[in-house]
Amino acid sequence: MLKRIAYITLFALTLTSCSDDLDEINKNPNATETPLAPYLLTGTLKQGADLYWGSTNNFDSSLLFVQHWAKIQYTEPDRFDVSNASFTTLWNTGYATLITDLNTILNFPADQANSNYKGIALTLRSWTFLLLTDAYGSIPYKEAGQKVTPAYDTQKEVYTGLLADLKQAQTLLNTANGTVTGDLVYKGDITKWKKLVNSLRLRIALRISDREPALAKQAAIDATSDAAGVLSSNSDTFKFTYISSPQQNPASAWFETRDDYRISKTLVDKLNELADPRLPVYAQLPSDATVGKYVGGANGLSNSDANSQGFAKTSKPGTYFLTSSSPAVIASYSETLFNLAEAVARGYISGNAEQLYNDAITASFNQFGITNAATISTYLNQAVVKYDASNYAKSIGTQKWIAFYGQGLDAFTEWRRLDFPVLTAGPATVLDGKIPSRFFYPGTEQSLNGASYQAAIAVQGKDLLTTKLWFDVK
Image (cartoon, rainbow, N blue to C red; front, side, top):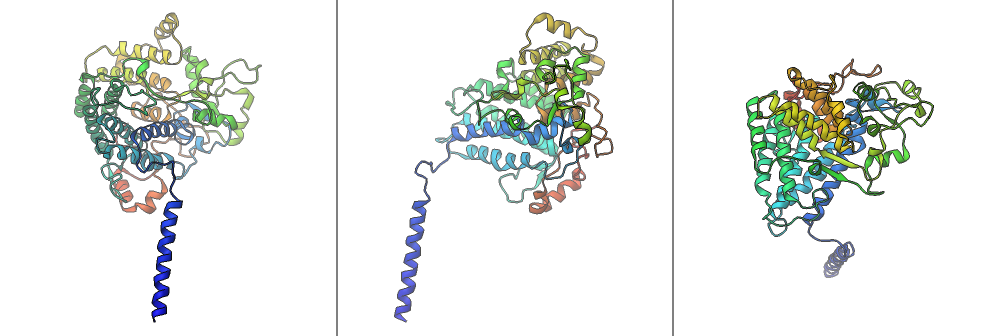
């Protein structure tokens, strides 16, 4: 008996010793025990830009839905022949990476993250939630990161909550509240972050305008009357600028090894109709020099029909978008001006809607390197471009659609909200002539958060690509 006790004691001591040794062996001497706010901020900005600008949520889905790009081979996404496995990246990265890391900053004590870090984190978290609800509809918001199986909030609840979050972010941001490092976008310039906050508040005000006009009006007034202002020049544009491989623009990385996208024929035809000088920026001439003009690829074709258009006879997206250092624009000065124009047109704020509309187009031209005053004036004075006060949605919707080139997620949202331009599904699409109105929820939500998922679709509608979201009333 004594021998047995001795063996047990020796075995326990051996296990304890092995455990201690393994703890030491598995320690990374170069790693910090506590995550640092600057590193989390840098990582969030890079991963957020990749998420917004990358293949899954941009040129393999939303850019196809709004007919900015088209597939010339492997056309299933362009025909909407997709499953709920096709839209997992936005959800998984949004929640598991971005929101998780931003919540970490928000939960830091003051000595680890000053209030400016927390204001920036709350701004970026609001932007992430905005992307999620714009794409899926009802989403976990209030309980996100708090419970393993969080309840879904309605889109109205999310938008309303984000307006409150951004108002709080504005109070946290102050040039006197300490410096910020790790900010690869605004380089710690708090005045620019404050402008971004108000511009996002204005964006959300218009998201809810067709459902909650009184709340939208107050939100627009609050955003535009705040002393910090909104984005006021192209230098204020919120964009992540990439560098060389392997940290290059995702579209650039894609085209290094793949050649399955073209600029959409729909967009090329519209730019030709308007004699738009952005066409050479948005597209490349076909590699077959005998073609001698920009030729878009048609959307929604079968693989054989898409291939038959000719790889050498159709236009790739412009080199501006396919170089390593091409920026991921997330919130532009041009968009803010269009939003101001619409807020005026709706009677929410005072101003000159036509002038703001013209300024928005000019800002877009300038953003893409077109600065000649005569060129811009000629464009603006065309009858087909001039602002139509009797149908502001058509004027603003069409020009915003053009200006949003490359920003698929927001182009998709604004096209659904404003209903312009009128787009037609391609001949081989599988939704009975309809274009998607949302993303599918990931299949894992059904298996891992089934009760919340079922409760959400009972209110919102079936988990289909064609189910219209709350903000999309027409």
